[in-house]
Structures are given as structure tokens and as C-alpha cells.
Image 1 (tube, rainbow, N blue to C red):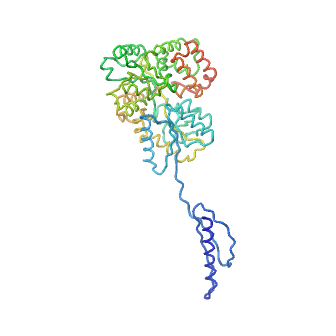
Image 2 (image 1 turned 45 degrees about the vertical axis):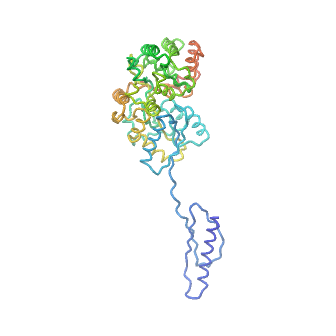
Image 3 (image 1 turned 90 degrees about the vertical axis):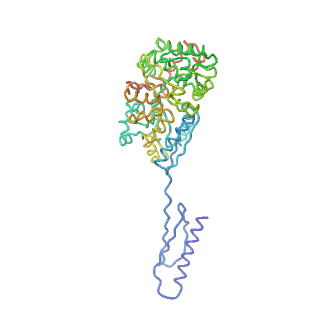
Amino acid sequence: MKKRTALVLFQALVIASLALTACGGPAATPQTVVVTAPPQVQVQTAVVTAPPQVQKVVVTATPEPKKQQLQIFHWWTAPGEREAADAMFKAFKDKYPDIQVVENPVPGGGGVSHRVVLQARITAGIPPDTFQTLGGAELKNYVDSNVLQPLDDFYQQLGYDKVIPGPLLKAVTVNGHPYSVPLNMHIQNILYYNLKLFNELNIQPPTTFDELLAACDKIKAAKPNMTCLALGSKEKWGDAFVFDSILLEYGGPDNYVKLYKGEVDVTTDATYKKALESFAKLRPYINADHAGLTWDQSVGLVGSGQAAMVLMGTWAIGAFVKGSNWQPGVDFGAVTFPQKPERILLFHPDTYGLAVGAPDPDATKKWLEVVASPELQIPTDVTQGGLFARTDIDPTKFPDPIRQELQTYVSKNPGKLILDQHGSILPATAQPVYWDIIASYLAGSANIDDTIKAVASMFTTYNVKDASAWYQWP
């Protein structure tokens, strides 16, 4: 219909011109007929007989500029996470209000469901502009698959490598090039506890495995209906978190790194076997329904008074505050676990990169610029529970003493940071297999010898020694 209207308009103007020429009066002067077509409307070509002095010029109106849009995938949907995502996007909109954010949040703690949907889109050739990914091996998997673009120029322009800890920079660097921008650092090995309960029973927060068992015995004696250690095993990685802390205490940081780099023969390693033996001792102290719960539901058990402790990452702070209305230092306390013989922080970052084939790379670069800024990190990390990726942000920006102390410790002791196996040291393909093995052992479905054999087979099948050789610590 628009094409026909344009054609009729053109014909009418030409006829009017002819009529003027046919009337008496002075000799006709050459005339210009201007036809303005609507934006993105193709004008049909028509053959019209007109005097030679009539010149036809077709002018196309300037179309409105295309509105920028940021397509983003993330998995922040649990209590504390959803609010953090809102804070994150608000910071972006404050800086770039004209860019529309199209988010595709996928429920599922740790991004397990998110990864399935995201990878299906990437395989289909319809990637978003950017997506949430952990640092380390998960990021490397995307880089090796040519899914992300290197960000050397971006880092140089912002000087971002100068304001984040060295181990964090290594976590987002593959083959010498940074590929994503971290907005936080999550510490994995934190033991949260019901502060009022511990004060009531005069229990000191455990910093070793033996102290943990002693605290559980005391709690069970005083509160027989209360679970000592809450756990959510639905996605299996929560089980590996607990086991990691035991392994770290018994073997230390060197053994921990070598194990997940495939440099330890678990079939002959006494440390690994001892850690599994101790892990099994926790079975009577864990909630019976752990196999059906997610991580945030396990945190909720503590927040509802049904459990005394939970071992979880820094993101649990947001879940306590938003999900249970519990305040740090008032209702719950936290200690890194273990702290002996050495206080090591197992960590991984949430990061964003620039996808190959991004629909709007300019909008994506603007997004990454904001991700790297204090304006985004402060409200987002305070809400969600992570530490700031930037160590030049004042730790007192956190409202709670837990993260103030952790941020200060990291700033002064960056060498104490080690990538955890949750999306980091182990190859991405091997991680879910390892989680299955550890979860089956905790559930009692496999004995210790079969578990060790399964772990050894996993290391061989996924060629962990070569696949994880990229990671260096310290």
C-alpha cells in the first residue's frame, strides 16, 4: 500500500507540472519534482511521459537511528542474586539509558541450566551479545571453541589489569590474552553459622574438620531435631564444595592445585583417601533431603532455624539477607574454612565477555566498561554477596564485617587466592562427572575404593593433566 501511495504521489506531481506547462503565459522553465519516500519503503519504478524540461529526483527520508540493544544471558535468579542483577542493570541504564537490555535469566544455581540453554543458542548460531561465565576452565572452554573475542585493547584502555589481583587476572586470561571482565570474586570455602545458637551453646566457630565434628556433636546433644550442616546436592557441586575444604586442610594448597591439575595419582595418595574418609563422617550430620535441595534452599534451612551451619560461597550472604531477612553479625556469622594450617581462599569470579558474532558489539563494549566500574561493582557485589573485583574500592563500602575483613585480607594477601575446582581448574567437561562421583560417594551409593577408581578414571578419560596445564599457582 505504501509503494502504491508513493507511485500515485509521483504521478500526481508530474501531471500537475504538465498542466502548468500547457497553460498560456511565459515559456516554461525546467522544474524539479521531489518525491520523498517513507523510510525503508522502496518506490516502484514507473514510466511516465513528461517534457524533457521536467527532471525527476527521488529523495529517501533519513531513517531513524537503530536503537541499541544488549542481549545478555545470566543465571542470577535466586534470592539475593535477582536483586543483584537488578542493581547491575540499573548501573548500566544510569550510564547508557538509551540501550535496551534484553535478559534471558535461567533458573538454576551455579548456572547449570543456564549453560545448557546458552550452548544450544551458540550452536545454533544465535549467540547473545554477552553472557555470564566463570573464570578459569569454563572460560577457557569458550575460548577454545572460538566463542569469545580477546579483550587486550579493552584492558589496556581501562587499565583494568592494574586494579584487580594477579590471580584474578590469570583466571580470565587464556594463551596470554584476557577474554572476559570479572565483576567480583567469590570465596568458596566459607562456613556460615547461626550466631545466636552458637552464643547460646557457647560454641566457637569451627576452623578445622575436627572442630566441626565437635561442634556438631554439641549441637545434636542440645538440639536433637536440628540439622548440624545444611547441604543442597541437587546440582551436585555443593557436595564437592564441602569435600574441597576437607581436602585443602589435609593436603594444603600445593596438593590441592596439583590434584585438580591431574598431577596426583589418587589411587596411591594417602591425603585423598583420608579426605574421603572424613567426608563420610559428615553423613549423620547432614539433612536427609539434601539430594533434592538447591544451594539457596540449604542456606534457607539455616535461616529458618532448621540447621546450624552451611558451607557455601560469598553469595550466601545475599541469600541470608534477602531470603531469610537475616543480618550478618547479628543473626549469622561466618569464617573461612579451614583456617589451619594455613588460611587459603578458594575463589572463582563471575565474568562477562564479548561473544563472537554479537548482534551489537558496540553496546556490549559499553556494558563491559560498566562491569569494570565501581559504579556497578559496589551496588551489585554488596547485594549479591561477592567481593569486589577491584581492590582499589574501599572495603568499608560493604555494610557487613564479614566481607570487610575478607576484602581487606585479599587486598593484602592476593597470593592466598587459589582457583577452586568449581568452573576453574578442572576442565569444564570433567567437572560434572567429578561432581557425580563425589555426590554418589556421599549418598553411600559407592564405597571408597570404587570412588577412588572412578576419580582416577575421570582424570585419564578427560586428560586432565594436559587440559589443566594452563593454570599456574602461585
